[in-house]
Length: 313
Ligand code: F6P
Ligand code: MN
Image (cartoon, rainbow, N blue to C red; front, side):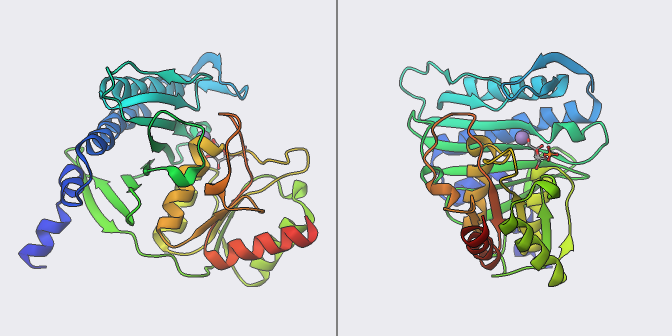
């Protein structure tokens, strides 16, 4: 590899954002989140796996790690000077930050997605959605940036600011260096990642999944949205779903913290994201804890899922 290739491979996150002409405030925000993730990695690797003795607004028991990750991120965002509104999956309130008018961004985040997988040592992640202005209850198409950090055997950060998707690796100095501009997804793929209990699937979803299986798709499901999604994004093919279930008509995953940022990233990589009836990014949120069914990945499969759901439910 020539010297030019070397330089490009070692571009760190801040330099990359500068070279892409991302404005100073957004660069600051993304770098603060990246810095926070270094403390979260450390907490995951060495922290207490016990319960915090509290539950979040979905009634889920919070791990000490959930609470710690939430605090780490909240503190960085509050002190960044560029954020006016924060809402986290782990807390039930919208937090307003006083910045003397300097705070330009509203941020929604899931500090430690998949945290119930930490005790079995599977991968987890942090997911962040960013809007300009004060309004957190907007359709996801208005996001100006979205990112996630995947804490796997390696730590990676994937972001979009509406101009393609970029992946960074954390190096031995805990700096994020550019790994690649993520290629566009194939129109259809051969991996499927089906969430929720199969015996609760609707007729349309059952038919869709059976069809994928008949076509020879490979099952790839860990139970963590971030690693399951990342596999499809980085392999450039496949489909993740967490559908509407019997007794759970709006699925499990949260629009603000999980689905909007992932849908923005997926569309920027040439894929699609639907709740089975409409584009995720066009859904107008009505509550901060709103959940939606999700079908996300290659365009052809997302369309097929929508068709079967329209026919069979
Ligand atoms: O927070 C949501 C989450 O942990 C996702 O990471 C994952 O896709 C999903 O829940 C799995 O949920 P369950 O195991 O309850 O079906
Ligand atoms: Mn989550």
